Amino acid sequence: MPHLRNKFVQLARPVLTRRRWHSTEKAIFLDQKQLEALEHLESVPWSEVPTSSEPVVRRSAAAEYGRKRIGAVQLPKTLIQGAAEIIQGMCASAEINQGGPPKKKKEREEKSVASRSMLSLSLILASDKKLIRTDALRLYESLRSTSRIINADDEKPNSEPHTLTYGPRESVAYMAGLLPTAYAATANVLNELSQRISDFKPRTMMDFGTGPGTALWAAHEVYGEFEHCVGVDLSDDMLTIAEQLKASVAPRSSIEFKRYLSWKSEAQKPDLVVCAFTLGDISSAALQKSIVGQLWDMTGDTLVLIDRGTPIGFSNIARARQHILDTTKDMHVVAPCPHDKPCPLLFSPNAKPDKLWCHFSQRVQRPSFLMKTKHSKSNVEDAKYAYVVLRHGSRPAMKEQPDYASEAYTWPRLVQAPIKRHGHVVMDVCTKEGKFYRTCPINLQGKIPYRDARKVAWGDLFPHPPKNKATTRMSEGIVQGTS
Image (cartoon, rainbow, N blue to C red):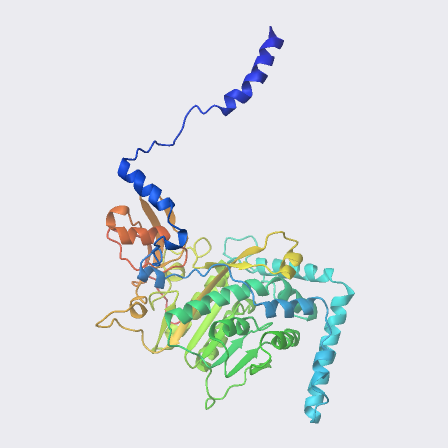
């Protein structure tokens, strides 16, 4: 009968679910000696059990040296607090007047101007905080419209890219919606520079296109205090925010903010010059080339160029790199390229920079103000960026007793995320020959190379040469005349 059958199924279901029809556990048989040893081990306290203090080796020392990944970047608490105060519309007039009346008339006028500027900024924010998200969305859309390379086959090839003008509202929106990702990318590049060139300790720095001082705060975390720093930006409102953040992040540091470059040939050049996420805001290619040349002439040791990880951002970095290589002989590329030849991803005859371009990714922990600006519940975000690090002097040659610092200049770099499969790993790398190869280390090439290949990540330097034939995806770049 149907009702009796259903009743039987209901009663038998708990029994059937409790019964184990199969098991993956294996029986272990111990002899008498092993049983006695086990009983003795149970009577020994945990403090007397011998343990190994040696760390677990997950990759070789060479692969660890070429590692670029630093994990998720977290903004300093002082920077988060300073940005939150500005977003909340905190008036800085009380802080400016804490030091008492200035002794000189010029100082009194400067502090009065700063007080009025910050007061007007606070009033704008206090009037409608929803404008911050509206302006941030407008900035995202503007950056998105200038991220794609315009080809001749497009429907509107003559359309001009949207230019950005940073007023009071746009400056606050930039700090609330774009500062964390820019900080994370800059921190990754400077951290790699400090590891690759451990003896480079810059004492002076210039940040061109400083905005809210993003690169200055990242360099402050990596290198510590500087003797003197200069931040240059065309927007007065951006410089006002940078000065306010300086009071929270580095109140005792010697940092000067100015609107224009003023440099003389006999003046001392800064050791480190950074231009982060600024070239993309310059629509003219000729003006980009002129600014890059001036920045290189003002660089005492190392120049760092960073732009957005889009095809047009990569194109800006690659062309700036090639312009300096064409106009200067005594210099070399530190990162990411293992060569000083034209970039194969842009200047190769079979290059397709709108589909395959050199860029990298860095994860950042979103502060609360960024989560509120984006209306997001996720506290992490990946920042895509393209960069190049240039340094004066000839390229380091291999020493008689090679070390990782000199060998790393010839190691191939992963331009894309590796494809890890069973028994092999597919890697797309840029090599010292100036070509773009696809290699495939397999488990038969040795334990150490294959283990490093299993642990390698996007952007790392791979220290082991391929033992099988590599596939050439992009040939060596060719530059027609002088760029």
